Length: 197
Image (cartoon, rainbow, N blue to C red):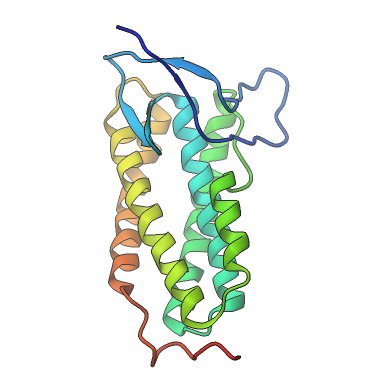
């Protein structure tokens, strides 16, 4: 039985050219038992070229912006090194994804999703340990979801071959990011100066 579902996140694609297909927010989709589904909040969204490109790009954008903020706000050197790696690796991945997507006429979001935008805005008012813990928690949760997304994409025969290859090649880097994020654990007070009052 087919069930109509709604995509719960907003996909923003800038600079789309004529003929480029962009998956819009609240686009109705139908469940198909032959498809791979990925979690998005309380919904399960079918894995397609469009949804993979959108989720991969949105995730990368969020991690880049959060890491840029970490370099400005955090005084923790461990987080600085991690943030620098995030920016470098995700900018490279996003550029590769954009090149692949352009070949199959899919627009690529150029900013984080609205949920992350709100979280980043809140983090801008934080400092010291409060900021560092919020950043580490975001990186841990985001990489858990991103690794799950890329593992499913790499194994999904219905995706365009270039996207499957991309997902497979990036998995090792994402797993490294995931392990690194979780190894940061709870930020030690001795590592991060207290916020000034």
